[in-house]
Picture 1: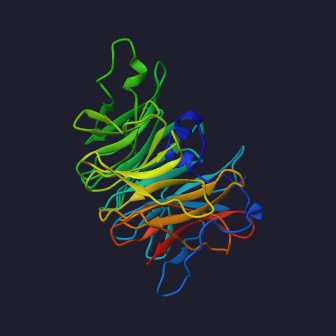
Picture 2: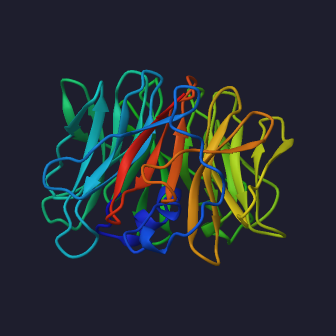
Length: 349
């Protein structure tokens, strides 16, 4: 994803927190944190999804149950950066267009092929959420100065926008009507605690996100907090189970189930923290295992029992990040190549 009008808008997005900057060069990588599974018929195989013309980096953000992948392909971060939202389908990488600016990025896709994301407008500063439909192209949705993060099969879009008074605030868009997504159960005089920033949504309309730096679920206007501060959400599945990264009292990852119970996720040998980011209907999760001391990170997969497995990289020993997993156990994310740039990738079982 690109940086645009308000860096605070995009930095608030959990995909940005877990994104991979160009500065984390793979030349610094030594030994893998977990043993990568071989790219053989019996294990996960990694596929480089390529680049759009004129770009040098790409990353995948989401995929649907048909294996269609979305993300962004860009030049390096910095002044004059160009970024384009892409769709990858049946081996073909396509540019989704723009709302007038030179930076776009796709964040979510539903099973109808509808895609959401963000684009700068003609001033190359103002950010606007978009919805893209096959055959119809890209249109602006939601409030001004907004970021679109997900769309479900009913066509409901969620995201957040910049409010001059309260900062970033969540929204829900359906059939042209925009409503706020917020926590209304807050003490009088604490308006900041109303803020809920969506990350992902399931087909029942349950939204996972952050309520004032605490992981939370939003359902039918009611917000439920994860139970401890310093916990960050990742993804949500059809049942309403959510992946969580906790930083206090220790750095752990787990699945916060819809019934309120939790299931721990294993930290691999050599890592000191994990960031589970995506989860499918079977309870299989994907994400990142890393160590803060050497800035090494690896793409990992957790089975429904919480056991961790490494995913292969494009280059042996290089860094990779897994972002989303569908119900066919296809996984998307990003992996570095030998020159320090990175590519959108698809892992297939």
